[in-house]
Image 1 (cartoon, rainbow, N blue to C red):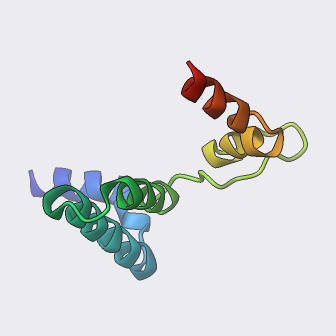
Image 2 (cartoon, rainbow, N blue to C red; image 1 turned 120 degrees about the vertical axis):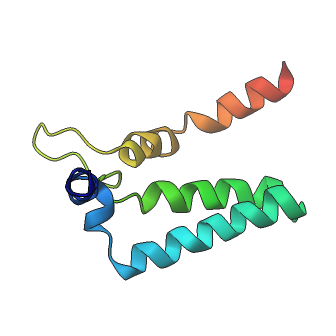
Length: 97
């Protein structure tokens, strides 16, 4: 049983974490605690903490850019909406509706 748990941990992304990722993930969890439990600026801290968690997930390359037919990461495709100017009209369309 212990060997099975050890194999699971070694094959997961947690085995690839370094101390920098651990610190940032702990800070993001602290921001989530402040926003949810204490109510300190939840509209600001929850998106910041979510972005910190997504960018520092172990074993996932969300920041990868698309090169030579390769697919990019999640943030690459989300940034395309910023670069192409899609998000501002969507925001104003939703506010106007």
